[in-house]
Length: 337
Image (cartoon, rainbow, N blue to C red):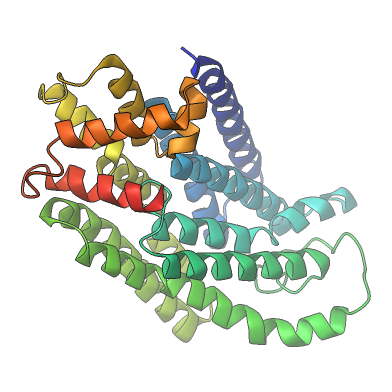
């Protein structure tokens, strides 16, 4: 089929990313174990394996790809900080550097995944703008942290900063004023995003979302307690340790692809033609009409009637009470596509 080569390439890249994640975590563990860095290792392993499993079942799933990147970046942070916490040579300086500045990137990736559940799209243009603003702020924080040692002390990294640039004193003065509210704000927005999606979902999806809401709420409470009472985010970060696995489970269960599997297993998609089944599979992966046309080497004027036929055969237009979950995800996909 036309999409076999891209799938093979993705499988190879996924395996390489997972191997790199495992190697970095193993390298870090050889330096010892610190409670303040434990969450990064847990995030790396759970995100890496969860993403690999998801991509084996849902090739091309955009949030699964982000989860894979999250695991790899977390592994880099874990290994770098492990070396930075146990510096043995001048050559460790760059390891310590990599253990600090990508932190904002991980927070940005997590925010994107939570707001864009389950297929990588957004509930509304307003939420898309919120996510873009959050990503922009995390890029700024990462850049400042990469150029000056503004986060070294709070992360207890003992390696020297690997280079010197002018403006270090100014960066150190303004960093607390910009980093603390941005870090807290970006993570606090997770909860209302989940609540809004919960309000717009049916009972089946709500039961699944409640698991993620509970994990996020627990993490935010622990984060607030840690920052207010102990001036450390460690309790909150450890409380969020199951988050990658929960996100992966939710992406799998609350997805158009899973609905397609259930419908097909129940014999309710037998009336679809072979072409409509191919289109439906790619819809389930979150591809737009144009992307589906490119993948199947068809014109957009061929794909659009096929999608309309799929919706009609699924009964989405005639009986809104049946297949409500399919209806919700399909209509959501149509608005975004």
